[in-house]
Amino acid sequence: MKITTVTLPPLIRLSGMKYTCALLVVLCLALTSHSQTKQTFITTDLNHYWAAFDQIVQTKDSAKQIQLIQDLYINKASEGLKQMILARGYTAAEYIQQINAYPLFWQSLRKNTTQLNQYYPAINQGIAQLKKAYPNLTPASIYFSIGAFRTGGMIHENKLLIGCEFSAADKTTFTKELPNALQTFYQLQNPLKELALLCTHEYIHTQQKPLVNNLLSSCLYEGIAEFISCKVTEQPSTTPAIAFGKANESKVVEQFVKDLFNFTNDDNWLWGRNANHLKLRDLGYYIGYEMAERYYNANKNKTAAIKTLIELDYTNEKEVERIVNQSKLLPASIEKLYESYDQQRPTIVKIIPFNNGSSTVSPGLTSITVYFSEPMVKYNTGIDYGPLGNQAFPEILPNRTFSDDGLSWTFTANLKPNQQYQILISNNFRKANGIRLKPYLIDFKTK
Image (spheres, rainbow, N blue to C red):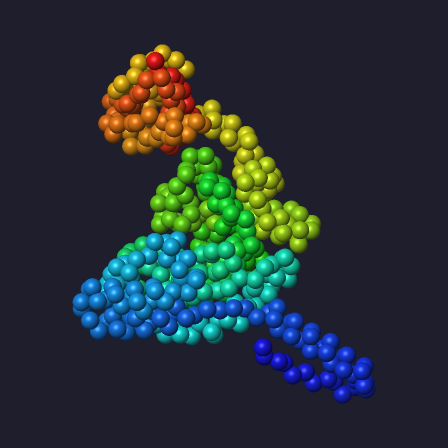
């Protein structure tokens, strides 16, 4: 442990035990302060990457290149890099493909990755400001490594995992070799200058509870982290979606309400590549940011508001709805919006060749047809287990077909005698406007 030398001011005139006790108190305070503000940064993965890189570019043997990246980088991965590789599914072959495809990009990026310590003071300052606003902050380590273009920053437990192929780039980084979607990102952002704010944002994620897999929770999770990181550091958001959303609030909110109960895949709103018709990625960040900001502004106790937002339990639907409704961003309460949506949902009106609930269904290969109240699009289907699980789910053959008008769908089940079966027709079926089917449970018994 490094001992900090403390020189007492000349006006202090103490002797004997009093002097010793006073000195110990000052030393303890100094050491405590030092330990509280010290942030752990791990950059060993960057050293391993460039050591592997230097050998990889010396050979054209693809098998040898893969072995080099595996031995010198992946096998030596820090705990942070291990989790990033696992979460994003990075492979040795993928690393080599991108090293060979973008040589000028990597050459221009390298210098920045060796000078990240220049940004430590700004990162430390952001975390200290967060700690002041949220005293319950628990420590997290920051790992800098290189991935394969699927995250600039993510978390695992108390670890921040920073992907430097994104986050260490700046306006001097050569990006013209990259795919168009990636070029657009680098044109809109200046990641290295935004690194400190990114770390504060990701630090907040390490304090949050796990999100629930729905669009609203995902938007809140990201928007809360973005708003609080900007608020405590007094810096504007560097995410283009925030400024766009504020300038086009009614248009963005209108589309969000249409999509709110329809999407399980959030690419149109989060973590995607401009899949929405507004042609701007990550507009879900704006939705969550705006909700968090409005909630914060409406509460007199700002420290309590930040605590509530960071510690939000996404499994508590009533608490999520309370915060969303209090923000008054949406045109009505969540409950009323869902009631309106539910009234528009198509239903299953009948099935053949037996009635649902029948206990006398003949065993054997059976074609089952479900009929919808409205036409369905023909590229979204879904069947699943019922409450009794897989033991009550029959063998379903692969031949499944829609009628020409989209009003019925037929599948074949292999039914055994004297069995109870459950087949859930899921909400993955939907109308052309995206509104999803009300799930329907087929529950029957065979003779």
